[in-house]
Image 1 (cartoon, rainbow, N blue to C red):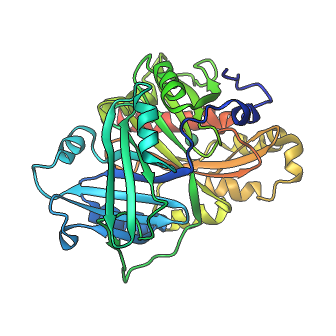
Image 2: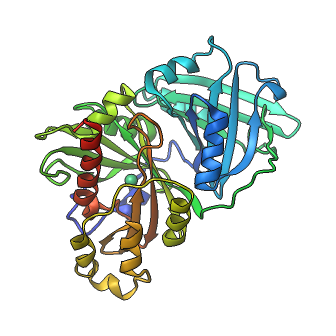
Length: 386
Ligand code: FE2
């Protein structure tokens, strides 16, 4: 059962007890973006976000129809893929959606079983289980569709010792900007159409064995002008978390509706990337040109001690420094978290990134929603899409 945001118990223990085990996930494997120019996108993610060159496939490796650059930062792997000719179906995805996330790949012990378990529960197949081999061993992958044209690919790599996947070669580059301290993917958020949130909540429950452990309705997530609803889905061990958003009616256009208009359908809204030193990470990202949403008003920072209550005693960060960097803070009964959101990273106002540091808190910054959404609305107003 979903929990109200005001509840003090987020119910994670219940997930451990109650989750169905038919789809055990070891974690996120990689996230693949279809983009118009992977070479330039790779340069941006290396330079601005501090990803490292990791693996490559393209004409030089015998891949005639598409090129992929794999970037890595600690546990995060991003794949940037561009078609090399007009015949590739990847073109259709880019024409319709612009640059965006196509694949959320999940690391599993058994990709054949993952495919059987999910398709037998109603998942639409994307890729039948296939074995890929090279001199480093074998990888088994399979895939299913989720919301929109987004897919989950299951990756079984226990018998593989190569760099990324068969077909790729290690990518050695002379240009290696330093890391910005990003560690792993904390959660990935999907935006779905009007009235579709509960459909996809049910789909993640029934097809993937996930549980809904937090819910926010439009009475909780709204500003003077717009609203949205959100439910957070988690797999059994809590390593994979997918909040699902849908727009709600307000006086003006919901940011979710703006996304759906420009992405032309459901898709991934943001990836939240974890750091354990958000002040140094954000200082570095800003120095490298990453654009973030503007700061909440000064009163927001004045109210932080009251909102954090007893957690102020363990808070190490200087509030003035957080304000200078526009970092937001929220707390629950277990601790606090620090977070900040980039502006969209493409010309269409679609995908963006969140940077998050958890100091015990397991929530998603609900206490920041109002300040955050007012900031997003100012951006929407600038775009003429509010
Ligand atoms: Fe988030």
